[in-house]
Image (cartoon, rainbow over all chains, first blue to last red; front, top):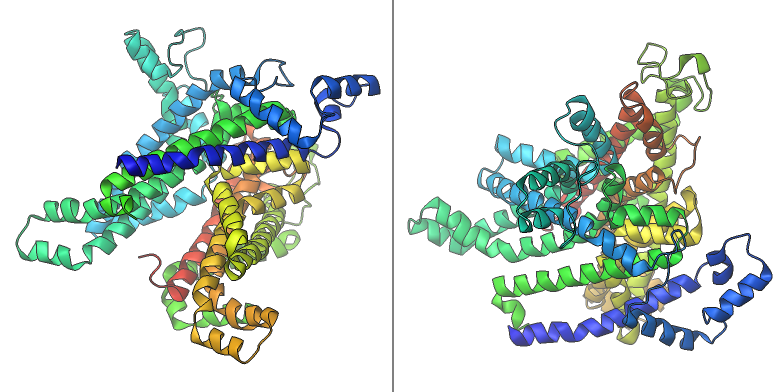
Length: 334
Length: 282
């Protein structure tokens, strides 16, 4: 297991290097002169020339890339054009909100999707199976931003059960330990704030969970059906093992690596969806930030968000692979 | 190619696939609605009736009227033209570019293969909407750039399918035989390999149309793809946002239309997979 982990970790620096090259090229792909774009249409020729010199834009490209790498490593990710604040600080402030939202959505999707898939596979062609299939078909077809708007008006305004936007009640402040409100509320022992944060989280997390929920349900059902058709399951049934043991111990146990892989693949979609969900629910995370900054053509900020997102995806992939290797020893020796 | 698809749809296996048939019926309805937009709803998509703003459902306006009193049904139907065009365009682009790259990787092998596969894996892991947003920043706003951006994000799946297909097909007897009698490489690919690897690519293309419709609507919702007053479904939802209480119908119907169209293409994709590749999904 350790050797597998080391082998996987050895690839990380290479991936990071390719990624930084991609974001570097990205900024050079902007149509026109980057200096002109950064300064805006109204900059004079002298200002542009000065900006080029002060930002090293007049150096040869390979040298610019090396400098860019050094800056990244030192934590100097440039200044956001829209706010003139350091990019890294802006992202750091927004990151916990997105992590909290995405993790909550994934938790909902797994907690509902895996049991639903097991139930559907166990009672194939039953009403429950049909319902699960219908829900997973609609779940991937429904536009997130549309269902989000409808639910936020229904529960937030019409019924008034849940707050329609934001992370905490207006005027309340939790302070900041981890930036994850639920964790912070527990750490300072404030149960009212915990309940408040949970109520704010419920609706956006549920909306964001629809697509992964659909995929996880479908994947669990399909893999489990495949496993239950195998000989060792027939043997287990024949020797009189209780159905629960057959289903969970022989079926789900063997389906687990495939389901874990499917879950790991959902994080990219979850972060895509977060861009829309955060915009609708005024959730102050990275998704909302990137939607704003793309509109404002804030290249340094977008570049930073791309890097952080890619880092998150890489970390998730690594964890997924490790989980799969734990669940299925064959992977470790492949 | 298209006649192959036509034959597939007529096969008994496909007609027994209820999902596939439902998909075809839904897509036909959307197509007919798009074609007959002006016959079904005689009021133009841009004709304002300023005295009838946000009016609800009526006989003359079955889907009600929007912020400027424009006929919502007509706008939704015209939106079908835009969304179908965008979806099919993005899928076609991703299919052609992705399959070409994948086939090149599979045929040539070596460092080119590693390069293409590595890039495709990187794009595949990335959140598609974020990738599309970044590309929109480079390409500028508008439906055409949105289509290109979304198709780029959709390419890796085609690359992988085409590459695996080519690597398998190269070993097959009929391909080896064609090569042995001296069929030139271009013809070998087009006549002997492509037909072999096409089925999974077509299934993927159908699923891609649905995803592309959803993503472009999302980009329009964020204000990047279609610009007002274009009757694009995502943009219409943005417009209806301000009047959810007073006139929920403005935003209700475009959303239902997106869902229906995406559902149609996903069902068709499922149905085709049942026929073409029965083992892929239980």
